[in-house]
Length: 344
Ligand code: PMP
Image (cartoon, rainbow, N blue to C red; front, side, top):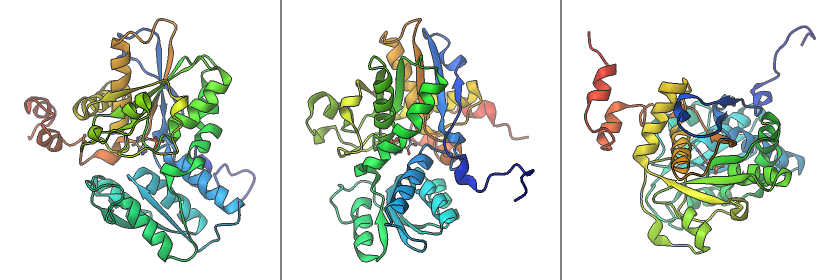
């Protein structure tokens, strides 16, 4: 390539260094300043590009992966898309076991990147042979020259964020960040970012976001696994029905739980007010921030960074679909939808 041509060698060079964008209307009544770390600016449109690249490149460095080998993962969609994208560029086969709760858009997107997708029932326990964990493990045993990313139990997940998301936020805020609000699924994002930030300034408050129906908050508070906390919920990618070792619970100061309905409306509100088209868990993260602000957690000197994990395009058949919202009972009346959709 000529030195005069300003081009990237491939999309992988665009992973990371996502922008920090100041929020205005969504937070106008809260004290302090609020900034979104918008992970949709990664080429795979989510924070999971970071872990896919890091984990695969570590395996290459250790000589575990050679071109033509197979990469297997369980995923709610985003990690799968990122792994499929990295696999395309680097020449690996990609097999993904996903939950049937994942949106149709997400599953089609995985296929568009060349991945082979196994869709497994959502509401079975993690040790059920039909669960996506067990399906992935079995495929890994059966397929020679395969690696299993295992993001929930892989230290490198957290390390990816320790090495990238953490330093980026520290530099972008010139060390003036006071609070981090981040969703916890595998816990890799919040834990790795928190470890880095706490090393720079132990006073930074790390505020996790969890879902009603997930065990994480209760486990953080009691160190006990309470299966009564577990029930089905709508938000994808946030919360868990098991305790991931990719989460460093000691690095997190507290968890806030959010409701499906409020997170969905808040995500829509972010698009409509900030012009930022973000996913369901971004709504969850801002919803948690609102709840924390109402509890008086922030003051005039607060510089709050909220991680928005992915892009709204992944939820066209869900939170951005008025009929879906209505079917969930998330609209009191059709009036909001009717105001925007005029048949002429
Ligand atoms: N939001 C979305 C949309 C996700 O897919 C995930 C990952 N499961 C998260 C948030 C949580 O990130 P992490 O797994 O790093 O805790």
